[in-house]
Amino acid sequence: LFNLPSAIRGSISKGEYDLAVREYRKAKSIVLPSHVGILKRVLEEVEKVVHEFKGMLYKSMEDPQIDLTNLENIVRLLLELEPESDPVWHYLNIQNQRIRGLLEKCTLDHETWMENLHIEIREKALSDAKWRQIQQDLNQSSDVDYSHGNSHLLRDSQPVVLTGEEVDAFRGRYIRRLTAVLIHHIPAFWKVAISVFSGKFAKSSQVSAESNVNTSANKSEEKVGDGKYSSHSLDEVSGMIRNTISAYESKVHNTFRELEESNILCPYMSDAINEISKACQAFEAKESATPVAVMATRTLQSEITKIYILRLCSWMRISTEEISEEESWVPVSFLERNKSPHTISSLPLAFRSIMASAMDQINLMIQSVRSEATKSEDMFVQLQEIQESVRLAFLNCLLDFAGHLEHIGGELAQNRSNQESPHLQNGYSHEPQENSSDPLPGSVLDPHQQLLMVLSNIGYCKDELSRELYNKYKHIWLQSREKDEEDDDMQDLVMSFS
Image (cartoon, rainbow, N blue to C red; front, side, top):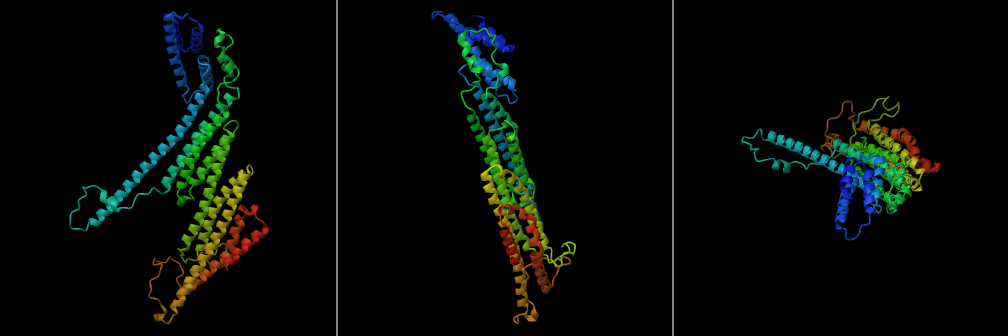
């Protein structure tokens, strides 16, 4: 008994953990008379050694690279040392906290990158402002003193705003790193949990029947033998994972909304949706995640996809309005207009390019939502809502464009009427033209010819473009609509360009 503390220490230092546990359980089985104080002190020393040993075992559970065999062995040892403990639950909590910690590290890294980028852009803006100030002062006779800092330049310059593709690239990388954390850690975490609560855990390393120990220590063997490694439940682990995914959802939602609409045709938004899709696929593999986690990530993918589609619809309308204010009056060639008899300008083709760019992306997104809609009634209802939103946005863009063409033609007709007014000398207005930029080479300058070109643009849209676009993209929403409604849509489009 007197040698037990040093013997247990020696066994631990050699890695002979089973021997150390057996010696400890022997010591625990000794019943001492109350007056043998020196032996009690020896047992207290044993408890101290074993307490340090348990701390070492618990600490080893924090190793992110620990394999399942070592984990099983550690759990078995801890249960033998302390039958009332719950080392498995301790391990599951540690792993859950580690995953949450990795998500938070991604956030901190992202904030650091964004702050550094902000500083870089701010310094560039300051340098540009300083250079402009130097140029302004070159022709002044007084000396300019730049030794008092740059605060006045910062006050005069515009506030620094983080925009552009470089910023969105950082945001895209942030979403990619967050998703990688889930894909890499959640499946392994969930598989261990299933193993624990299904009774498969530690089958290969259960307590040996050859252990010569007293019956007073048999409680831990019974616990291990029955497969009861934790007093908690698998549902509680599922709750852990759900909370972790909720944190991921919040970060992804906020970051996706920060992506610039001006970069909507760049891959950042679609790449973010693809990243979420990767997480969904990883979780749907056998025993890779709780069903709640699968549903949560699928819901997130659907929500983000819907946001992206609606932003594409918004971009279509805004871009249509912008190009309609920039009529170049340059006629396109016979081949460029696909041998159309209408002598059109480049404006209808620019409009078609905008519509095609957005609708092609929307079509890809709708396909992914449609595949999910077969698995859930809620998803199906959401798909129908998205389809109707896309249809209305598509039709409204065409109607808006028809309105813009009508407005351009109306202005030309009004200007022509003003020129013919007797109140004007020689039939010319002395008011400045709205568009003071130099005309492009080959552009039509005569107002009468411009008016004819507008009429050709309208005829081209009515006879060809509206039908071409509608027939190309109607499959996006027609599954949920009747044939009569399709005819009504086409009639509305033809009327709008009439």
